[in-house]
Image (cartoon, rainbow, N blue to C red; front, side, top):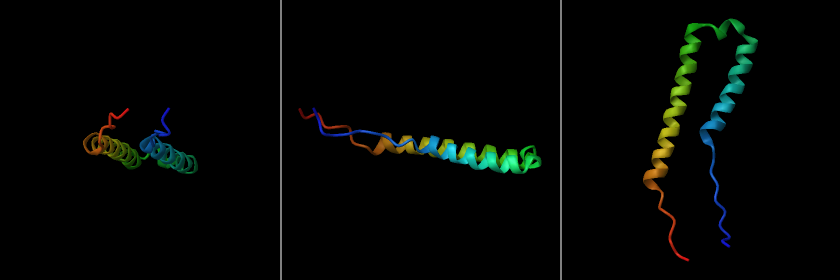
Amino acid sequence: MSGEVRGEYQIVPMLLGLFWKVEHSAMYKFKAVANFEEMKKHRAEVYRALSRFEEGIESFVRDYTEPPSETS
């Protein structure tokens, strides 16, 4: 049995959750803003930016992490 513990951070889901929490509060307080076209565009930009961030992290991990050593 190995003493090594492996795990991962769910960065983008965490960021999305925080964004939705803030967005929901703002939209609840300012209902007219929720349907404002400019705000819809900004919201879509945030989703796209977070998706690109996630893709960048995945690319970094794929390209720059070393495979585990195969020692027994």
